[in-house]
Length: 201
Image (cartoon, rainbow, N blue to C red; front, side):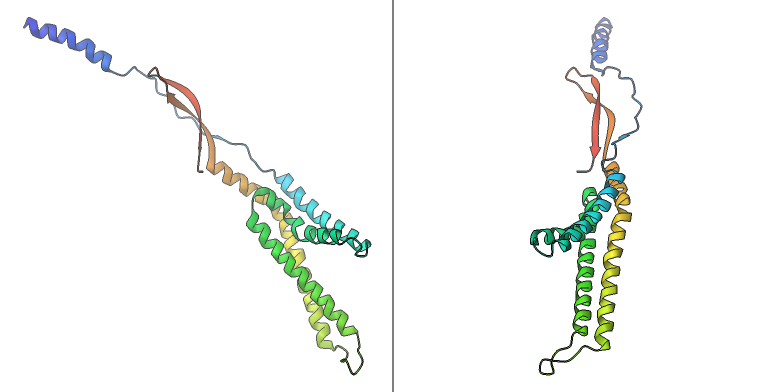
């Protein structure tokens, strides 16, 4: 009986020491969303500024009468890519490529329409050909209006959608990256508060 009492006396402190130290429960904190990374105002300003810049370069290129080919190429790039600068800023490259291609197609249609209208008004000698007819005029006008509608529609869409593109980018960022308080284990066996980055990479 005495042996059992001594054994119990020795085991109780050992079991007590083996238990982990008491840690007060920590209530889960709400994740802290990261601040927006894209400005809606900046996206719209880039789209509008890129559009106006393209038309300004085109006016300068026409005023130079083709003396500066580099200015002409810069004007063409500004007219095609300028309205998409807002979407390029927000990282929506696929949208920017799509509307740029649509504007390029519209511009090409307008140029072809102007060419057809110009040729239909010219008359050649009988040995070289004949004058254009009304069908050519109708085709030229149709291509001119369709091209203008495609270019202006894609440009207006880029400007209007620029702010929404920034908003969509910020929503994707907020869903994928968050900061949240947490506890980490220390070398002494305890825990310490920390800030964790939670997201999909």
